[in-house]
Amino acid sequence: MDKFIINGGSKINGKIAISGAKNASLAMMPACLLAPGCYTLHNTPNLRDVWTMSRLLGSMGVHCELNDHDLFVDSSKIDSFEAPYEHVKKMRASFYVLGPLLARYGRARVSLPGGCAWGPRPVDFHLKAMEKLGAEINLEGGYVVASADRLQGGKIHFDVPSVGATVNAMMAATLARGSSRISNAALEPEVTAQARMLVKMGAQIDGVGTNCLEIEGVDSLSPVNEHTIPDRIEAGTFLIGAALSQGQIVLENVNPYHLATVIAKLEDAGCEIDVRGETISLKIDEPPRPTDITTAAYPGFPTDLQAQWTALMLGADGVSSVRDTIYLDRFKHVPELTRLGADIEVNDNNAIIRGGKKLSGATVMSTDLRASASLILAALLAEGRSEILRIYHLDRGYEHIESKLQALGVDVRRVKTEEF
Ligand code: EPU
Image 1 (tube, rainbow, N blue to C red):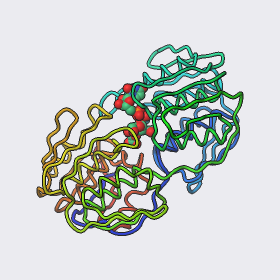
Image 2 (image 1 turned 180 degrees about the vertical axis):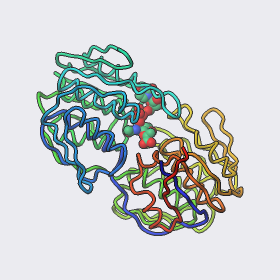
Image 3 (image 1 turned 90 degrees about the horizontal axis):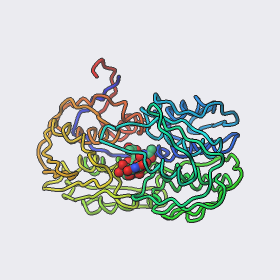
Image 4 (image 1 turned 135 degrees about the horizontal axis):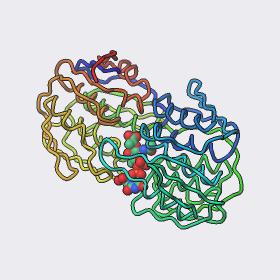
């Protein structure tokens, strides 16, 4: 088990390159189940979640090998149609194999993910979508057992846009017989990245990038080489870190369009931001202004950046609010931030942050990926030394985070510990 030791007070200053998007990779990798053969997914981040997906695909007979940032996938031979609990409980995106397995082999046995650190995260939309495409779904011993002779096109409507259900349904519909429509589809760039890959593989999808996808099923698809988009959440985390430490940062290999709402909010908070091509520069030399955010599905403010924004607002002189409309209870970082001296009250999914208070270093515990990022940021604001336990959560989604932070001037080191 590793922990981080951070000495607060340093500014984030410098330039870094942003890695490939975890959530795009996790959607693209299972798409390789749809057509037998060899794929190269360029710009794949070297992350724990990518290893978990590689192991899951490996357990089905798919060979995955990450060299530098090129992920080689060979799906020529598949000899198992199961996603065991041991993988799904570690990472919910394991559930994405359901759609492609059903579409290509007409059967799948996929463990239900169960609960999540921040409350219920059901998969009912995924299951309803598969049923709309003609699959028979049964629940047996904690597993979804799904079958279909061949999936049939169908009309799928999501009550709220879901990233995971959209990518699962889209993969399934590409090989179904006839036409499908997915309405109120998620618009997140990671969904669009997967859709582009599917189209390159030969899928017939109209409306890519919109919330209504029209898919005409085809008999077969072909393997491709594809590039993963930059990670907008990693980029947003570093922008927020620079703003919080009143520093200056240049991010390379970003897609600024994917960050339009975050950039606008950072500007509201007083940051000076310059966007050129695939580069974003930010500077600020005074405390950020209190700025409220409400998370929403893309292109709204991402829920995956609300914990980091909460840390930012600890440095703002005044009261601000962070409301999460995507998840029911994604505020597990708040009690840990309180250990550093933060004054935050959470009611009905709304955090009221009274910023500008003195924070002092403490030992805190990571509870999930983005919560961990917010603890690092708050530790930068705190006076003295903080220890952040259970940083394996961070390794799921931030590539080389400590070397990137060190390159930006942060006094952070990773230490092995017996503490849990
Ligand atoms: N929902 C349902 N039923 C379903 C599916 C979703 O009620 O069957 C609800 C969820 O409970 C939530 C909302 O719909 O309230 C949206 O959830 P969504 O399905 O979009 O989330 P997800 O696909 O499980 C992905 C990301 C998350 C990110 C969300 C929202 C991946 C692998 N995960 O999750 O990323 O928070 O979209 O943008 O793409 C992270 O990277 O830290 C992370 C948690």
